[in-house]
Image: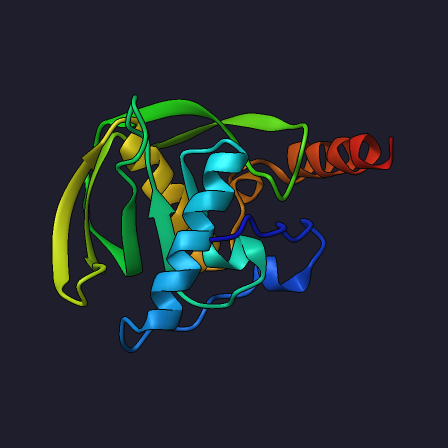
Length: 166
């Protein structure tokens, strides 16, 4: 397993939709393992493959209190989202040093291909739901700052770039 480097916000891959995964292969399993190592090193509660420059619809999420419970997902899609919203401070290693409060559905039902290659539907609530939605955004070529006004987004991107130059 390896901790992978995250790509910077300006990298065009971060703003493009990732490609569908057709099968769970040994390569996919190795990528998931590296993603979990990378997520733990940040530390974070989720990571999508495009964040490390791999343009596949792969994500990992672990919002457990004791860690080690990462859910591996290929091609995740939200089937149902609760009407009740939840506000949470979100950040991304692709935009270091900044964060913003984002509102997302408090609970979601997600369909994905799991580590065994089976289609699974699972309910996620709270921080788990926030992280899953955040990762799916990355798979669609969106970053959490895309949920902000253009001015607020521009300010956070500029602040992150300034911090990175230090």
